[in-house]
Image (cartoon, rainbow, N blue to C red; front, side):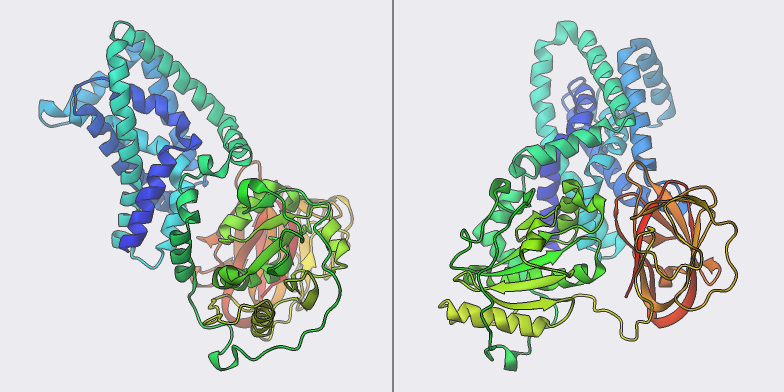
Length: 574
């Protein structure tokens, strides 16, 4: 727990130095550079406390009330408008300050230019700061999911807020020194800051800030975007993280660990060709098979919406962590199935979500896929230190055999003292699965009771009883070869026989909702997948969504009622 709090503290400090915080800096500076000496401390204290509430408590409140996920962001924009206008038009600011002073009880020290007034202003700014830092803090809280809400998660959130507050306090101290020199024109400076805040609010209303952050993330060196990346990359920290990653049962039983595997030679490994962006390499530098000569390499063809691929990733990462210092490297070749999977930002997000540290390259045109003659997701090819293909495995499973093959090739390369094997925990496909995957687009739609063809279609009312493994559209849908986009009254019904239901969906312009009914009733929390809360799934990013998670493989009717504007691609089951 202490280590996690320390990590949160460092992450919070890093966030305060990131481009994401630029929108709130005018507000922080204008609030903290004026008044008494204790006012800056009050501002950062109030910001830290209200930010903690906004990112932990407010998120739960918004979800419980069924409000859109963007409600916290909308609130932040409203606060920015209010602060900006109050600074830009001094009479309005004076009136607001007078009303606030009369509304807040207590002694005079909680009014005016002291710690108390700074505390109130900082408390308001925390709501603005939350949408910026919230996604990073969410990742920290997910790591601490085993902790109780009132103790562990709250402590992590406070540590994160404290890290940000320390850095912002130092910025305020520097700003006060500059403000002293600008005292003769302080009124004009405050009005200028107010104008900047209004412009930032306008930009956030148009989502220009998110586009700017995406551009920064794509074009700047990783250290400037993620100041903690250099710490994580150090040898000592990498070794510690590797130890933390080694959890779960052994992939190979210890008694079988060093049993050699008989491997053939299938020829030279093709090089990476026709690729786009590289991830998890220094400066995004591209690699070639000649660069990897002397190392044992596992080439993994995958795509981020493929559930079979996703379930293999913990094993790949475990092997990378366990054997990378012994001359082993995993290279992920991301070969997309759907057009949106070609987007570098989507791939980058999937890499982060799955905590992958090994190099990944985009193969958007399937040029490397074709060079290898590959036909499957996932597909793993083992290449020895001399650049020859020595083993291949298609689909899930076979992890013990693959790790034994890795150790065999490392021993051939002269690494004879490999120590214990890797450990990994991953979700396995359910035994007894009886519903096959299908697609929503016309090109590969199978199992649908009505004909699916490209164009706008009105499927009418929801169907009556369905046979096992049948799917049915209802309402209006705009269908192409690869996808189907919901219109008015859009609904999908299916009779599935599986434990888990996954659906590839996306609504990238804004968040939209799907109501999830199991056997005609809102799905209970205990049977809902990870992406469903209160019987509804919020759809935004284009990715694989888990809708149903049952205790065992059973047959049920699933009804999905869509907001207009959601694009669907493929059902898979597990």
